[in-house]
Every structure is written in structure tokens, then in C-alpha cells.
Image 1 (cartoon, rainbow, N blue to C red):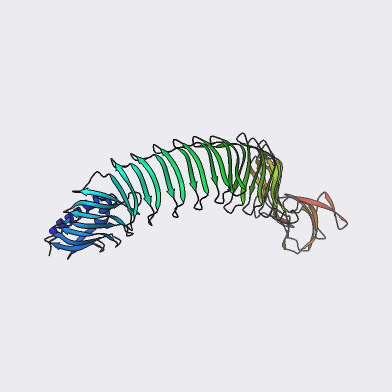
Image 2: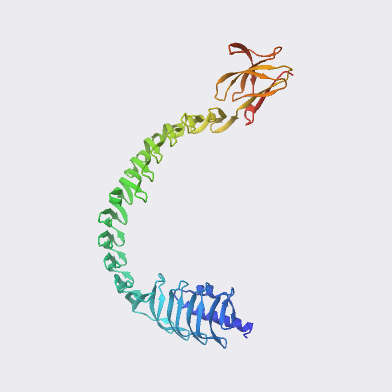
Length: 537
């Protein structure tokens, strides 16, 4: 049995050995190796385990040193490495793996030092393994670059100068057909660079100078037709660029200067569907039109420009192709008629603009063509009378009031759908000055005989109305009506006593003198306002 002290010392040597191995690997860093190995805290028989019980490595341990074949594991259980040890030093052929199973690197050790040819995963793409030559653990100055697919086929070859690509570079598809051919000078592309489709047809032909695109560049579809022709000057787009759809029809024709659009630009979203048609300066449109499309090819918007400004008609569309909004502009200012539509084609809103401000009457509609609101504007702000309607055929008012320079002002009344008052709020330049709600009118008969009652009041439609005869039993308390008006009048009698005043009215061809009653302003501001008149003691 190995003592706890000896276990600890051995564990340190074990981790140091594998970490040293990993440090030589250009992909798998010391930090990564520590993240895999740091939780190994116990050894049992000839195996090392993570503290959560997962196997870290297994092999032969003799005299507290690793000997013979060993297998190392990621914490998630996949194989991390396979190879041999002599007296705790890697010796012979080794392989390291990503968790997904691809090779990180593979080659031979001699007593802990890399020797000979190794294949190591490319730092940028794990699909390829780069050939490196080692002497006593150090990469010697190579004059040849070779890269292989993980499956073993040759991927790319070129010569090296001071560690940089220099000379003809060629890469291949797995079947051995040429994929790319280029020329490098001390790591920079110079001259022609060609790339091919898998069927051997040319994909593009580029020209480089000192690492920058320079001259005419041509790109092709797999069917052999030209996809794109563009010109560069020291890495910057310069001159006319022409692009085509796969059927050979024109996709775009753009003039560039210093990588920015300058001059005439013609672009199509799809065949016969213009995207841009106009002149540009420093990547911004000066004069012409720009259209935008939904992914299904339906037009989304159409904008006209003049001297860099919105000018003329601007149209926006719903996804079904129906017009969403129509607006005219004059040098970026909205001017003239504005219309908005629902996606069923019916009018949603209409009004006028003057110098970018809403002006005059604006009307909103429900999708069934019923009027939703009528508002008035002056200098872009709501002004004068405004009305909002329920969605019905009778144009029933929902809310009515007035604006003053954009603020609610004066009396605003909310109505029920049957046309009756719901509430009245008085505003003073946007601030609530007073609220008023319908109040119940109640009478109680405190006499010993029947009382007949006639009432004159303003109903909830704001109309004066005479109602009666109400017959009230002795000691009976009855609800009569609701009103939004603080003042109402009544005439009552029981044969002996009369409750009357000087306000004259006629009810059922009979004249009556009415007594005035008034509900206090405080009571009218309560949502449960109730006013009671007692007849008799």
C-alpha cells in the first residue's frame, strides 16, 4: 500500500508530467490540462481518479513511476490521450484527442521529448493537422508546410521561409482535386489566387499585391456563370462592380471609390425587382429611389430621394402587399396628405401635414370603416374639439373634449355606449381641475299620506326632461333618477301640503311651480354620489 505522503508526491509528479506534455501542444494549453487534471486526488491500484470518482488515467505503476501503456480521460469520460511511459517519461508513440474525438496532436517521444514528425491540430481549424519536425523537443526550422485532414488525406502544401508561407501554395479536396492555388511572399499573398468548386469549375480568381486585393477579381457560380466582377486598388474597392443572379440576369451595378459607393448604383432584390436606383456620394444616396422587400419578395417600402433628402412619395407596405402608409415629403419634411391603411386595404387614418407638422382635421377609423376619432391639429399639436367613438354604426361618442396647444383643456365627458354620461373631467392646460360623476336623486316621504311628485332634471344625455307622476308611500324612500347636472326642480303634494317654487313648467297639460334643488360640487365629485330630499318632518 502506498502511504498518504507517497501518494501526494506521486500525484504531483503525475500531474507535472502530463502538464509538461500538454505545454508542448499548441492547442491544449497548460491551463486546459490543469482544468482536466486538478481534481485528481486519489490513486487506487494502477489508476488515478478525479475527486468525483471519474477515471482520470489508468496504466501500470511500478516503484511509484508510470510504466508501459497509459490511457488518460477527459472529466466527461472521453479519451484524452494514449501512449507509453518509461520511468514516468513519455516514450514512443502518443496521441491526444479533443472531447469530440478529433486528434489534437500525434507523434513520438523519446524519454519525455518530442522527436521526428508530429501532426498537430491547426490553431484556427481543428479539421486540419499541420506537420512539424522536432529534435529533442524543439521544432526545427522547416522549409516545407504540409497539412492533412483528420482522416489522413493531404490538405495543403507550400514552402516556408522563416516560418512564413513563401512560394506556391496549393490546397486540395479530400478526393485529391485542387481546391486553391496561390502565391505567397514572406506570408503575404502576391499575384493570382484561384479557388475551385468541388466539381473542378472555377469559383473565383483574385489578384493580390503585398497581401491586398488589387486589380480585377472575378467570382463564378458552380454552373460556370459569372457571379461577381469587382476591381480593387490596394485593398479598396474602386471602380465599377457588377454582380449577377445565377441565371445570368443583373443583380447589381455599383461604382466605388475608396471602398464607398460613389456614382451610379443599380441593385435588384430579385429579378425585375429594383432595390436601389440612384446616385451615391460617400456611401449615401443623393438622388433616386430605394426599395425594401420582405423575405418572401413582397415589397416593404419605397422611398424617393432628392439631394440626399426624402423627397416625393414614400410608401410602406404590409406583408401581404397592401399599402400600409402613404406620405409625401419635400426635402425631408412631411407635406400634404397622409394616409394609413389596415392590411385588408381599408383606411385606418388620414390627415394633412404642413412643414413636417400635423395640421387641421385628422380622422382615425376602425377596420370595419367606422370612425374611431376626430382630432384637430395646429402647428403639430392637438387643438380645438376632439371626439372619440365606440365601434358601432351609430357613431356613438365615447369621449369628447377640447385641446389647447396639445393639452387637454376645459370639459371632457366620457359616455356609456347607450349615450348616457359616464363622467366629466375639467382640465386646465393638461391638469385635472375637477371631476364630476352622475348623482342619484332620492326622495323620502315623512308624511302620513301618499305624495305625488313631478321632477324636472337634466338626464344623462344632457337633455332637460320632465318626469312624473311618482307616488311615494308614507315613510317610503325611493330612487328617482340620475343626473350630471347639479341643479334640478321638483313639485310634490299630498292634498294638504305642497312643495313648490317659482320655476314654471307644464306636465301632462297641467302647470306646475317647481322648487329648485342643488347638489353640492363636493358631492358631484364622488363616484357614488347620492342626493336625498325629505318631504315632511
